Image (cartoon, rainbow over all chains, first blue to last red; front, side):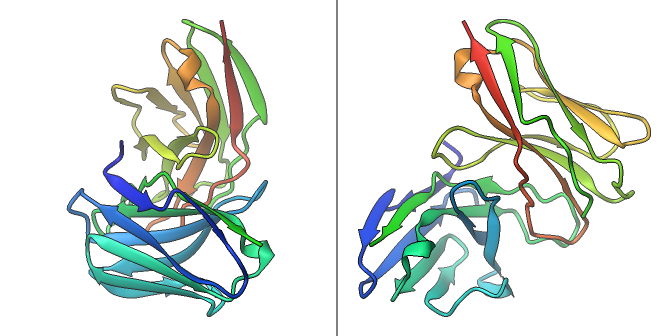
Length: 116
Length: 110
């Protein structure tokens, strides 16, 4: 138990569906992250939020839309996804974003997404 | 950020120490060495990190060579539940991106 929870743990959706992934951290952290882990590929950083403000967007397609209403919650809204978007989506948090270096990120268990 | 090189797989007998090596010969002075592990289909679990000095916590020890070009993660008494993929990551100052490579698949055997 890392203090970072994600729901749902598994999700199957069609290409025309709209769904949302939720992440919540109970660590009092100020920075939150979305990563994508595809089969046999390294983790890919998608978005970074620091004090509720998006500070990084790594060229993620607009069919992925993040939302950070407060420092404890992070959402990833999904719409018109493609089968190649099937992956493990991981949320992480850290005390602050990378300002001082060495900020440890703590990961949630992930949401396993399958797009049909 | 510096690139890391790890062996693709290792075996370890249960109860023995597991020593996982990592080469990071291009590491720069302000880059940290992080270790995470990932058990199948779960999120990565933080283990330990260091800059220059050796570090120890309740999970493991991290030995960093004096020139910082390599490091070793030591699990002192491996158990079956330590079977996982172990990632060595070198992360630069002011960089949010945890660049996970292929890692080392550690299998602890009875």
